[in-house]
Amino acid sequence: MDAELLQKTKEAEEASKALTKRMRENLIAIGKNRDEAAFQDLYEHFAGRIKSFLLGKGMQEAIAEELTQEIMLIVWRRAESYDAAKAAPSTWLFTIARNRRIDYLRGNSRIEVELDDELLEVDDSAPTQAEQVNLAQQSAVLETALNKLPQEQRQVLHLSYFRGQSHGAIAKWLDLPIGTVKSRIRLAMQSIRAELVAEEIE
Image 1 (cartoon, rainbow, N blue to C red):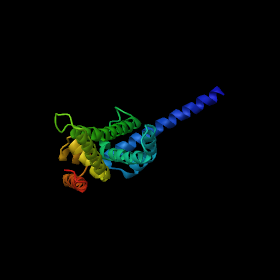
Image 2: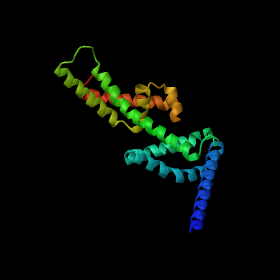
Image 3: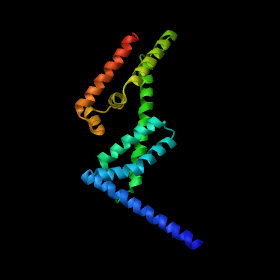
Image 4: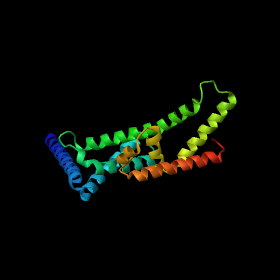
């Protein structure tokens, strides 16, 4: 019985090593040749695992799915930076996944904090009760306007205004033409202004 268990353990270890080797070769092929077949194999193995990881961290399914697609796109674009001597494929991919999740969470929380700070620090004097009510209304309208934006507009607006990234840096990070970044920011600001005007807020 012990011999059988030992054999099964050995076979499992060999299968794991073979899988790791295949995923490593996939990443190298993607990085060097943009090998679509290698990416498909990598995607089929890791996408579901990454989504499960995000769901396990409490993310909603729709967001987990969206972030999984972004993470796999990052893998496709940056596979040439993978160093097989420094990390296993799974370590490299899940590091990207963890970083993207943290960036997403910081992004959402930063928007809320920045909005509150900006709206509550209009002047140094203590606001009256009427002013407090007005500020709360402004904050609610502004947050609603942001939430109505398409995801791609909300993303570039956050990177530009709340994280201080230049248009060039945003374009490089998202792998977009700089004109597309500027256009998305302009459209986002137009939508927000329209929302504020509709609510008669300056």
